[in-house]
Structures are given as structure tokens and as C-alpha cells.
Length: 386
Ligand SMILES: [Fe+2]
Image 1 (cartoon, protein in one colour):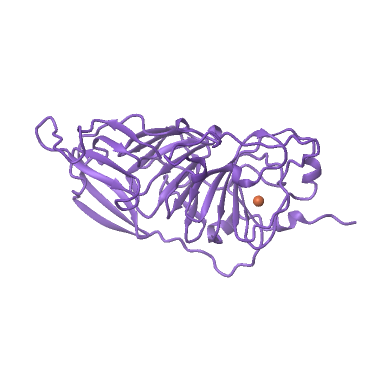
Image 2 (cartoon, protein in one colour; image 1 turned 45 degrees about the vertical axis):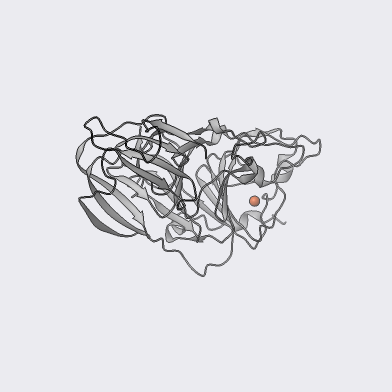
């Protein structure tokens, strides 16, 4: 990402840094890929290693359906009922060896803090607002925000109001800015659809000195373990480095437009291991006088393509609604439904807003997905014959 410093840090790393009572702050080097990846250095009031107990909370391994027939899928999340908090309310819909897709309609505030050590998280906030409170400080969030939380960060979400609809992607590999958007120094280039200022790092660092019993639910090895600390886990006086949680709002994505139809990679927002996350945003459409603004049929023979429709205005799709998810699996072509090409001619603008995840390994669905599936979606490409 980039270098950020927040709060108090000593003149150099790994030297004595004392609290007002003369005791040493506890330094923690926080890396997400050993000692050769991005790192930050934090200074705690308490020992981050000290716990007063732990409790096994069981497996969180997602169970997938096997041996399903190949077909286009349409899931409707609009009817999902509010349930649980931002962690317990996660409903896994699909996943593979690289990521899990969880859908949420959050009903409750989080009572414990959370740490996902199995993967980086991308949380997409469909509606609602609030604060991401973390050991790195606070990031305020708004509708349309992607919250990127690197693995191992202790956090909780505090919502201004509930219920809130959101997606939680658990990414087993790192979440990064695509390399083609950056120069050799890591800086974001002028042709990229965003700049550093669009990425909102924590901007305040409330320091908690409270003692007592504080719980952190840790996901690691596909299990939840509930840790109890004798101090508040957000006890960091300062930090610096390249690892921290941040927000990026989908409305800050600057769409790249062209004379004729531009391919999906221009919408790429994040690069992940074996998958990408793209943002389809309101924009001017192609300006060639004979342009066809909706996409051509395409054979994504090596890529599963999942779209989450943040609104119901998607030019090439019929029959979708706000909160719909379509899965166009690898192995068969997809494209606009009959009539969509003709209907698009002459259009100068689209108001579509959608999040896309393209994977190189097939997604498997869960039983939860079947419960919200619109099973006749595959018929939506049938042309009517008299
Ligand atoms: Fe596509």
C-alpha cells in the first residue's frame, strides 16, 4: 500500500520507548508475509502475548456442494433476513481454494473483537455506515465502501444503524493494488482508476488503557478460538508501516471509458491470488457512432464470473434486482440476454453499480445459496420462437 504513521512512535525502531510510568511499551512487528512482505510496527501499552484464557468455539470450515450440473446461476439476497453480528451473521454462499464469499444482513452490533488469521478480508458495505475500530485506529465507513482488513488485525465494526447489508470476502492470499497501476516505486500511476488519496487509512487512534476481561474471537486453521485478554486489545499508542486496514469507496473509482466497448479488466479494483475484484460504476458509454455499448458474448472458459448488483440498473442483464448475484461459470459462454443489444444502441450513459469477482478456479456453492436461488435463470437467454 503506502507508508503511514499514526500516534506516537520512538525515534528509531527497536530502541527503548518508555511509558509515563517508566515501563517499556511493548513493540510488535506485524507482517502479513513473514519478514519479507509488507510490515508495520506497533507499540502496545500491554504485552500483546498475554491472555487470561481461551476457549474452542468450533469449526468454521465452509461445506460446499459437489457434483452439480454446469449452468448459469442467479441468487437473490434481497429476501435474506437480518441475522447475527458482522461475524456470526456471515452466510457462506460460495467459495474455492482462494476465497470465500459470505453474504450478510447484519442484525446486531459486535460484542467481541475479531481477528481473521486465515485470510485478508474485503468487506463491501452495501448500505449503512459506522466505524471500523482496530488496533491500527479507526476508519469511518459509508455505503459503497470496500473495507480491506489484512490478516491478523484485531477489529470490530460499530454500525450507526442496523440492519446493514454487506459482503465479506475471505481471501486466502493478499489483497493488492494491480501491478499495472503502479510504478517501480509502488506509487499509483496516472492511468489508474484511483489514486492514493482515495484509500482511507485510519485517521484517529483512540488509546484504550482499560483493564478487565476483553474477548477477541480468532479465526485460524478454519476454527474459531475465543481469547480473553486482561486488557483492552486496542491499546496501541502508535504505529508506522505499510500494513493497516483501509477503506476505498466504489464511488471514488474513476471508470475508464472508450470509443468502443472496453473489456472487464478496466474495471479492476483489487488483485488477489487467482482472482480479481472489479467495480462497475456509473459512466459515459462508448462514443463510436455505431458502438454497441453492452458486452459481446464471451467465453470465459477459464474463469468463473460473479456479479453482485448494488442497484438494479445493469445494461446487459434482464431480470436482476438490487442485491442479485449472478454466477456465470467457466466452461460456457455468456452475454447479454436477447434484446439487450438492440435496446442498448444509442445509449450514452449507464447508471450501473456492481461488484464483480472473477476467479480462475471454479466456485462451489453452498446449501445456503440454493435457498435463495432463482432456478430458471439459465432460461433467460432463450429466444422466443413463434
Ligand atoms: Fe462477463
